[in-house]
View 1 (cartoon, one colour):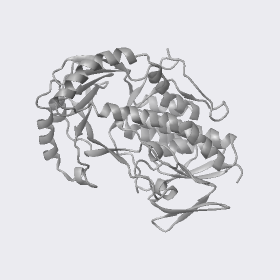
View 2 (cartoon, one colour; view 1 turned 180 degrees about the vertical axis):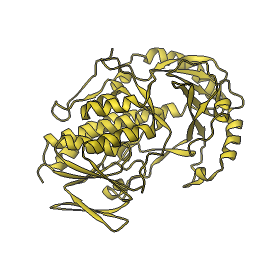
View 3 (cartoon, rainbow, N blue to C red; view 1 turned 120 degrees about the vertical axis):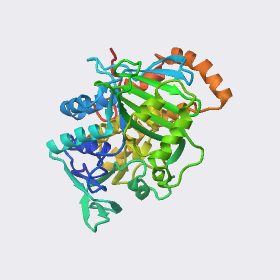
View 4 (tube, rainbow, N blue to C red; view 1 turned 90 degrees about the horizontal axis):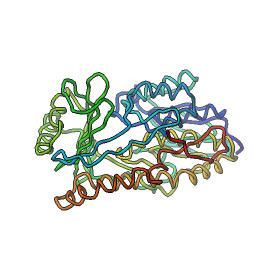
Length: 409
């Protein structure tokens, strides 16, 4: 197979439209197939779009990046505190691009809408209610079959279908299940609770029993998230089946001994996102076959702690497109893509896992963490390992695979 001309994109969340637009820019006609009948605009709470993600969006198109940034608000730093309110230190969420742009916090639904609007404007077709059930590769391309009985054919198929990817299992039926991170996650939006935090500033609290974070958004709202430790992995749908009233009671018990506004913010929120277990995809044996590949969370899902999930997916979109543009056949482009991406993403996933282990330790662990973390924050503030995460650039005009540091301000 020479250079592909058509692509099936499975998954219409964040990675899907970003990948479709990047492939279209590389001259590959891409169609997005989304399993949900009405799209994924109501899922999730909010996320951080790091500067490396914004930079990658600019490679896809300046208008795409501008639309995403406009939907959020800048959040350049995080203040970390103990459960008693003691300030442990401040850490950057990832520096700034050369024009001064810093990381932005954005509702997942707003980022979804921004990317889909840009994709539709670029002529990308998005079809809903298309749940993938199988795919077959052959000399002439790949054929996807959906639960409604319809089929689609193209030169390649890209799995952008997230942590619970169907494409991942088709590529490697022996692929491991997503790994449970030992945390349950939810979040919401509170109005009318004064917080002693400047707009755009994150506060994160290592609670006595659970972790809590919030950011003061423009307009007086506070956006919050909660990480509740639970060693036993919930069964499918178990956490979501618990009533909101029962969860509110559990929140009250988990945060009752903590300083900070956790209880007030939760009480002032009319609702919150379904409580779900945090799953990651730390390492896969195979990312691709000759004509199929997984990208984004389907290939390498970090925990939300990383602040990099969406950004890494967008980086993937750009590098996959330039690899297919510059390297033939597609199987060689896929191999090149994996060789470049795997070391970076797996390092970030491991770092986030280490942070998760500090979110709810026992008394001895809390003491050690609270003594050592201020020192660690000072030492790592400008560490090369931290800069490598954010000062990463996947250029459109460079040959595929060539990355360079983004010069921070």
